[in-house]
Image 1 (tube, rainbow over the protein chains, first blue to last red):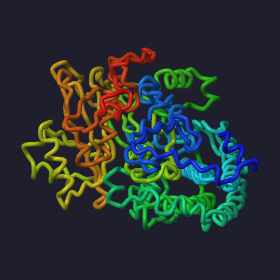
Image 2: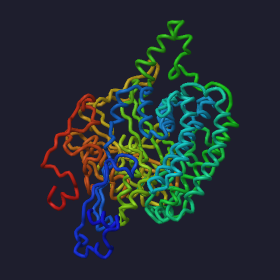
Image 3: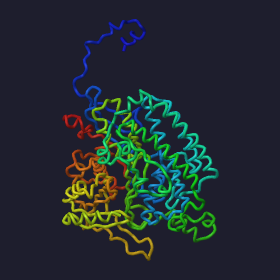
Image 4: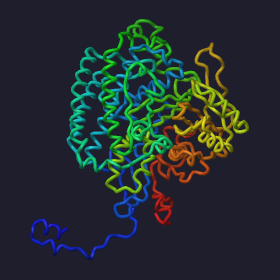
Length: 414
Length: 191
């Protein structure tokens, strides 16, 4: 360091600074990346074996955020599970809420019986959540590659969505908004107008970020051709969402196993060709536009009506009745203390999360608490491919590959 | 929804399938433990099946399984678990992207011999999923190339998602030097 200081200060010539004596190490070297690394979002540890800069082996170790979601849920009522689902993928909690609610509704035979407005509200908040997810993913991974501008633009837009979702649910991040049989409360007054205004503001920001990094040579050199995955590998490794679509597979749960009111709205599924990080980034950008398209249609089509199914098994009695007659009070009490009684059985329900197929597998035993709950978290499945993706790449390439896998610690580690 | 898959499976490999059922639109086939790899290979390679996409692998611990009726008029609930039955059920959910159908394979695993054949050779997605199931339920997957705990640390005692593991139990991490921390170091014989 002393020599370097002299060189920088100009007191030493470049010729004198030669270090011909130093040799590159011949042996393989083990490098520990994480669990808390500034260039990777999420806490994950990677033990890399490197040959110079080239990665020859890697061991990805998740689990630093493990809270045993499934054990907690097995001891909570079906409604008490919603706050836990918020904390899975905390960038798009509404989609987790909807997935859990749909899984319980499937067990209760309520699928397709919800009021139309409830379904529309769910799709609106889900698509808003998908946008916050993609905005974070693109913004943060661009920042990790040194492009700080897009991060600021997208985080600004994300904050608008969070603020609007806060108006809807009361919480900025952990919404706990959806309930079994509908949603907690109706959208606030003037919501559709605000959302339309928000979408108008967000469109130009996407264009702005695109112009900043789409043809930026530095950015493209870092992502194009990096972390390639073929369609066959993507399918066999269980990938979903933008990673699968970037590899050229036209698969989207919203189209292929349609749920809620997705058949009633028009949208396209963007598909990539090469399956590298650049394609993943392009697919996510296009999905932002498609989400805007879905949201605009929802604003135009959303009907009036109740936002909760009229079914005493899952719906709380109106507050007024709870305080004024004994039957409603008993019902309210039983509902809160014992939980929703779900008939014995098991079901697997999956939705298109921000990162891919988010599924909930529940085994119910007729009581108010799930006997077994399992979350099929897309981040966990995608992270399992990371070791193969970073193989034979440079250490610097780990950053864009992990950025585009978009591993969310809470979801991956449950 | 995919009843024809169950029919085809029962017809092609009758000796391997114990029974089949459909619940809530999900097709479930109970597979004999020793035939699992054969069934899975057939499901993957047969052109009409083409189960190319693995979805998840998990396990159900039936230790506390005592289902009750929700309403008195309901049909009787499924039978409760008794000690003479296998305690664990390993579930594999598969999907075909090509044909858009799906199936869940279930394998009964007794408590005294918690082993199950591994499908990680057929679908690499099950590599981590089986490690997770091992970590949480202690099911040992025969043929898995790297069966380590994935979420918890190697020093952890017990399997937290088993029904007899108390939810309140806390285990502070106590380092043990006899366990290899780094699997890459393990191969070189050091720590």
